Image (cartoon, rainbow, N blue to C red; front, side, top):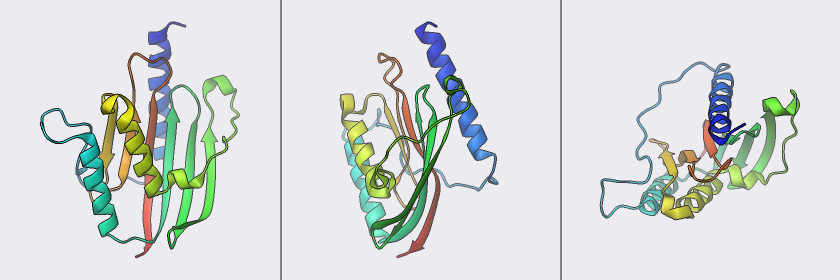
Length: 177
């Protein structure tokens, strides 16, 4: 398979998975995100500045306990969904499941993971890391309009084969402040 066909296949797989994952829940209206992507028209604003502003917004809410579900799609590999409950700033519950890629013949195994990576501080760390790769040139980040956490982090360097990655928050529920 040539590179373009593989990329097209990967994109199609990601769309199918996103549609399948979203089918089980009714649509909920979501406000417009506060900021997205690395800015191209704001001369003194960097993606790092936007992440810092969003993190301050998150911290201002003083949320100590929450439930979050993060979908991670990595190129043509299978999709994993991580569910994490944080109480008083500590991970108290964690689970994950995967949706197999066609090459996995209908079976997949969740890869070992650190639940802290899928907490809000973990998502900010991922956002900072992705923004640092080539100064965020191929990174797009969307922040939650209410709480400020990274709701979508997408990375796609067109020069690197099979390196597309996306983290997307599918559920966020405040348990206590």
